[in-house]
Image 1 (cartoon, rainbow, N blue to C red):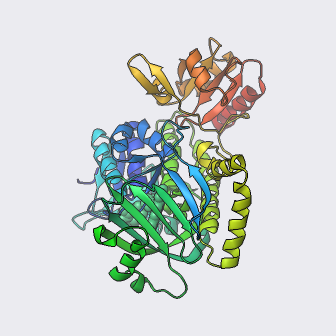
Image 2: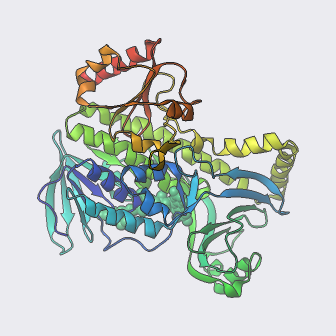
Length: 511
Ligand SMILES: Cc1cc2nc3c(=O)[nH]c(=O)nc-3n(C[C@H](O)[C@H](O)[C@H](O)COP(=O)(O)OP(=O)(O)OC[C@H]3O[C@@H](n4cnc5c(N)ncnc54)[C@H](O)[C@@H]3O)c2cc1C
């Protein structure tokens, strides 16, 4: 496709994060250009786990059904020690946000679905074989230099630029933003297989064996991912030899029946950019953070970036909110990304010990924990708490419930079950429970009026489904941002959160 003469947002990078962001901006009607230097989507299945929050974002752009048809929904992850004994289990089948906490999927399939989804938005242009070479920003916008698919240099002026250009992000380097963290010393052999005889169980296992830590997860279509850590002075070349792979597979299945269709050796980074934005330029996805894969969060964290940034860009470009709001992107996403990286590093620390003494200490700890089944189950739940109860560490929200992601229960609709978001507006939404209208001070505020929030009266069933999250017996209003995070929960008999929110709106307006 040829480059458009103008666009509001330039997305650099057509990986899963850039493609998701383009879908989100497209659904807001924002003129967007996505450039990708490769001629098409990549064929490598890197990420294997897509979480429920990501699926909720795909639901927001009308792609959840398409994507769900090609994923394996929910699984239980078992962590075993070197003797094959269970250390702990995390059950990832609950649906706090409408979809299972974790699901296995195929990254190339997802990327193709996201790309096809963009055809629905005339305001979005995708240019493959097109590379960002350079950019400069000033007070009013960003000037980008691109090389198009014919090899011609092209200039484009945009309001904002988003670097979704992966771990080696040229955008980040051009901004002079450093990554903070470390490259982990361990190396892992990663292979993808088709093994029709192995079946779907075990769905996901981490072998915390000090002789060789490893993991496996079943993927849709009878495919399976295997990962083995390299030990001592093993080289990449020897680990990638077919005979070595067959020996490793032979511990779990009949290697003769397995088709290995991809193999490579990876090492992982646990790094977060020192800033997620500079002026009118933003970083998202691997360009902003990279994590070891143990929590299945690299791509998912990138999709969170896209969701967080998209509605803010849309609100600012359409002049419904002041530009100052964009400062909250870094505030909300950077610390949250750091927490996810820490979670992955912590899980890695349980899986990767090769020192028998350290592994024995870990095993003894879990043996003690497992003597109390309730404590053992709680440990599994706590290990993935950040995925079950998502909270923004700080940012644009008010009051005690502010900054928490609204659960998405399934409700009974006249035409069958439906998910809560389907009842809500796309933008800002006020959920009213037992009150007729918004407080006058808020309803009259010019900024709030500009946001044109939808008003939804929760019926008893919806209130009960949300009980435990909001105080459903107490009349009040839950104000939601477009990304479904709570802006504020205003109990009718408590004016403190309302005062805080009004002060925030005032500060934004004055900016
Ligand atoms: C072994 C492994 C397992 C993983 N498992 C998981 C998992 O289970 N769950 C999970 O969530 N994540 C996982 N990840 C991480 C996940 O794959 C990445 O986080 C994700 O692919 C990052 O997406 P992205 O869109 O940010 O970047 P990328 O997919 O790297 O895309 C960046 C794109 O930008 C393009 N580009 C770069 N520079 C330019 C330029 N100047 N002009 C134009 N285009 C440019 C590149 O060509 C590329 O296509 C795993 C990763 C690995 C390696």
